[in-house]
Structure formats: C-alpha cells, structure tokens
Length: 456
Ligand code: GLN
Image (tube, rainbow, N blue to C red; front, top):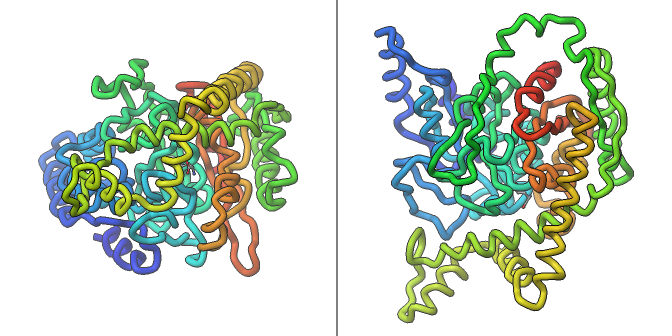
C-alpha cells in the first residue's frame, strides 16, 4: 500500500508508468497468507517490480513505447517475468521507454516523456528511463529494463540508482521484444547493489526458449551480501582495476571525470590498485554499434506489419495495409533506424558498412579481452554528462547518439557491467547524480557485485 501510494503521488510529475496493475494488493495479500501458513515464498516475496514495456507480462498491455503496438496484450509471460513471479515478486506495472528501445532519454516514447526525479525539467535517460525513474522515486522496489547499447546503465547513472547489465546470455530474452538480437539483454535496477543482485539471481539461468541463453551454472549472486568479508577493512585487496583512458578525456564533463577519479581513489583506499589502460578501438565502437543495431532492427521490426500485432491501418489493398500501418504506427526515430539499417544491409553497401562494423566488433572484443586479462575489472563513466534538460538533444540525433559512447562497446563485446552512484555534479542549484561503470569478464557478475558493494 505504501509503495502504491508513493507511485500514485509521484506519477503525475514523473510519468514513469504506461500501465499500472490493478491486482497488486490482491497478489500481496496472497503472499501474506502464504507467509502466515509458513509456505515457501521466494527471494522476491511481496517485492514490487516494475517491468519495461518491451518485456511481455500476461494480462497487461505491452507496447514497447510504440503506437504500433497500442492495444496489444501478449498472451504469455517473458521468461524473466515468469521467474520474478515464481520468486514471489509482484509486477506493479509497465514502465515507459523510448520506442522499441531506440533512444537515450524516453523522449522517443510515443506516449509520454518521463521526468528525472532529481530535477523534473531533466530527462531520466533511456531507453529504460521509466524503470530507472520508478526505482529512484520509490514507486517500486526494483525493476527490469533492457540494455542494447546502454539503456540500463545510462538511466541508472542519470537517476542515481544501481543498474546492472548482465553478460549476454545470462538472462533469457524470451518475451523481450527484439531490437538488436545480438546485443539485447534484460537488466536490473535497484537502489542498492544487493537489490540488483537479488533480482539478477531471480531472473538468471538457462531457458530452452532462447537459443542464445547460456547453460552455465548460475552462482548464488546473493551469497556474498551475507558474508563477513564485507566487514573487512581492505575488501579489494589484491584486485587490479583498469581505468579506461579513452573515457576520461576532453569530451567528458569535468564533474563526471572528478566523480570517477574520486571513485578510483575510494577503491584504492580499500586495497586494490587502479591504473589507466588504453582500449585503442574504443571510439570506433559507437559508429559500429549504430550500424549493427540499426541493421538488426530493420530486420527484427519487419514483423510489425499491421497483421500480426497491434494497430492496423484502415486500408483496402494489402500492400497499403502494410505500408500505412507502419507509416502511422512507427515514430520518426524508428523509421530513421529502419532506413539506416536497410541501407547498410543493401547489396551495394553491405561490405562498406555492415561487414566493416562486424570487423570493428571483433576488434572491440579483442581489446576488452586483453585489458581484462591484465585487470580484474575496468572502470569508466556511465555517460559523458549528468542528466540534461528535456528537449536539449531531442532534435539533434547525432548529439544523442554521441552520449552512448561509454556504454555501447560493452554490448558489442557481450560483457557484464554494473553502474553504481559514485558522486554528483552541480548544475546551478541542482545536484545531479553520476554513476561509475564497472565492466567485468563474461559471466563474472559476481565479482562486479562484490566490488560495486563498496560504494554503499
Ligand atoms: N541509446 C541507444 C540506442 O538508441 C541504446 C538503446 C538501448 O540500449 N536500448 O540505440
């Protein structure tokens, strides 16, 4: 009841949710009764979980922020949602997002712009801005987002919460509406690293409904939060941490850089060494990401033809029905991405764009691999700036894309990364949060969680 009251109180100002469940209290009572009967309830018993609107949950609409899917009710739960429910979590509603995950501010939602709880004239980041704002404002306890190029980590930084992007394949993508299938992962938001770890633990593991989902065993991500080593005065002793040189340069806000340097000093004081490492291919990641993500999306989004899902245009001819449904249903950013992707994949340009971007992807993977052979984890800012004003970059797509520089490489390499609040920048009278991004080797989420925990 207290969370729902908080949700409703904040919602007119924040607009984090596209749909709020009307069965939350009933489900909570059922869990209370189970507890009274001493029955097993699970890791998330009674915890309110927000779910990004591109992740399917039964009996709730799922629009992915698009008018094209207005009125679509998926007849099944995404595997991650099913697992949340099996752990006793209660899906409180569907959170706002940039249409199909394409954007960095939630301004590209076809329905509403979510505001940043720290300063409602600013963006919460994106594309999982609704999920980040909802957790930041206490509208729910934890939430699910998706991260194709930074959509969990950048909004976590902008909203001052913890954001966790698992290794590609750690969490099933079944029921996550595809944007760029080789990059997409479902991720977690919480107000603490322990909360994010609990949610990750609940949703991880093999799923035969997603062929790319790993069969590796899932360690108990929650165990270390119970361990006495947290009381150690040198919890990071012996660890080597690499600060990515290319992420603390001229293009980055000075307040962000000093927050990251402060985080590095804090880590050193707890026993580790921090040295600068260079990832020479770092700046190539951004153009490669936008070629690959647009190419994959142009293929994935071809399923939205007005016949199978969502809104259908009133057209008499079949060819007009496809065209009109897509023309009316997709917003301008999505149309631009489909056109860019189709262009990059077309016969005459494939070698120059798509193939070249795949080659860059391999370079990025190799440079992470060698940096992570020398270091336990790598650190960087999660974004070049703190949250900016609503409208500031809306009409400048390239400026918005440039803001993804810190995060996209990690998706190209499929690695796990954790963002934890580590400082503030002052913008006039407002204090805005800044997060540090920690990047680990594949399937080494445990280590990220252990290190991230020191910031709490
Ligand atoms: N901002 C990036 C994009 O628009 C990343 C989005 C995401 O991770 N879903 O593609």
